[in-house]
Length: 130
Image (cartoon, rainbow, N blue to C red; front, top):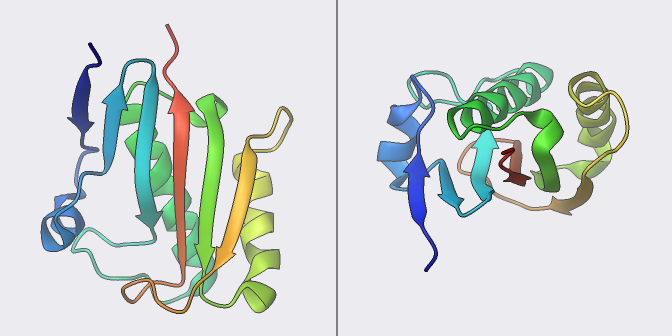
């Protein structure tokens, strides 16, 4: 029988309540993290793109920590970009600071035309260390 429980990071409930979703779900030895965006405490987007990406990674890290994981536990990444061609260099620069060395998780980047007012979103699957 699989167990499943919801994980909430501290101080980010406005966004989850507004859009009615769980930030992460722990199931057995995996943590499935919903798309994290560069939202401020009130759920609104950070307007500066680089700052929005940095905040999305910070929100991702806080959600991972709430689930008992860290950035090194990420095995799968999917990122969403409203303008991949002009944004990707910024995203890669931040990613290289946050995840600076191998082994890197696998990564799929997808161009989209809408992210509820945001320009970047990152979702991951992480293994929960024992």
